[in-house]
Length: 221
Length: 298
Image (cartoon, rainbow over all chains, first blue to last red; front, side):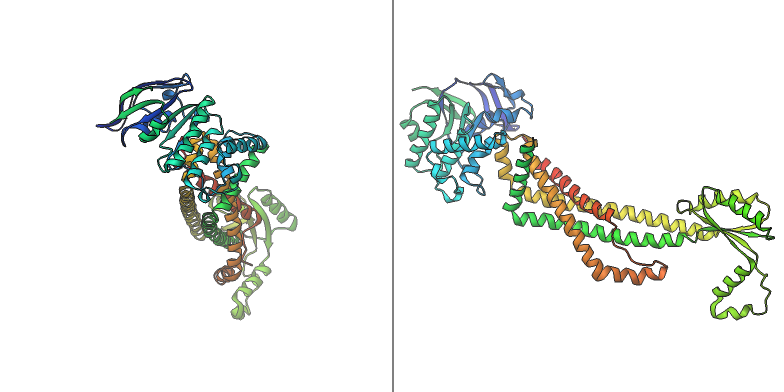
């Protein structure tokens, strides 16, 4: 599903955020991307959702070389991905329903299709009773569940999560992890960046470790 | 397609509702910029009235040695009227010329007492069509009349005509420079205000890009919003400038221009009013387009 070959990313001449990364993630896999702050986890995710271009190397998603992708094709790729962030990135002026409906509106889905799908997804994350609330009226865990619903509503091929539990307490972290596990069980490939070792211990999966922009370990339990 | 357009319109209206302060700021900026332009246009329009009035003075007077017989005179007049530059010809007899001169002297007309009424020559006053009331138009008519026997002397106020043309050139140049400057200033201010409104919504734009919004999908509601705000700004500018025209400008211009022969001070004609609103719409649209280039990058 994801093939990364000799990828480098340098923002400045003499310091590189990623150095010669080669990695393959098969369809339906669940992978933790771990490492200390500044290891290059977020940069690698950014390369995958095309927020950045690699300085060198190739990345293929579902057989498509995204490093050669023109700006008009990038939106089409992003519609097949779900992205979740540590700071949720919700639109606070819109309701929970409107936030989750947003990616479907972007795809030009019909209104009744949007309503049905959004309701189903909110039910899946346990927030169907709060669809008219605004994000700031919700707890951190609930806001992250809205963000996950927004990522899942398009039935993504790949779910990319950048420290999704970084701001949450351990109990809520477990609830969020159950949602990721559920998405993975339904066939979505999950790539989750975290430095929470406790979470990796409780939900053991393949772990790819980065340090200083280099891949230092790739281990499957 | 229609549903898509409605969706974009709904989003544009919702954006405006959700940020009333920013929306008001954008409308206000367009309104102020356009009101300044409207003021300038009103002044130019009324000064043009003065020049149009003055241009009526641009005529050729052909003095006659001898007044020919009525039929011959009619033939001459018909010949001159047939020239494409000529609007009309009026015959001024010696008596009429004397009377007109007396009127011009006003209180001093008694100076003419005892003088022979045939002292002044008869003439043909040749009025030119508006588009030929310039140096070239006059020259063409004069060239044609020069070869005409019976027309002794041709007068057309050469010096005055040159000064008048220089004044018109200066007026046009000033109008072009000032109007262009105002237009660019308006575009700059409006585009920067819209940039600020987009800056406040950069998160929304970022999320739209993340979930796969195409540049066109992201931009259309903002362009519509800019155009709507521009149109509203145009209406406000029109109302505002009409109010100020009634309260101050009309009186101010009257005191300056009525003495120059203009019959009344006019507000913008309907065409210009429609143009003002269209300019507001275009200003909002282009302002948004310029600002979006900075904020929407896939």
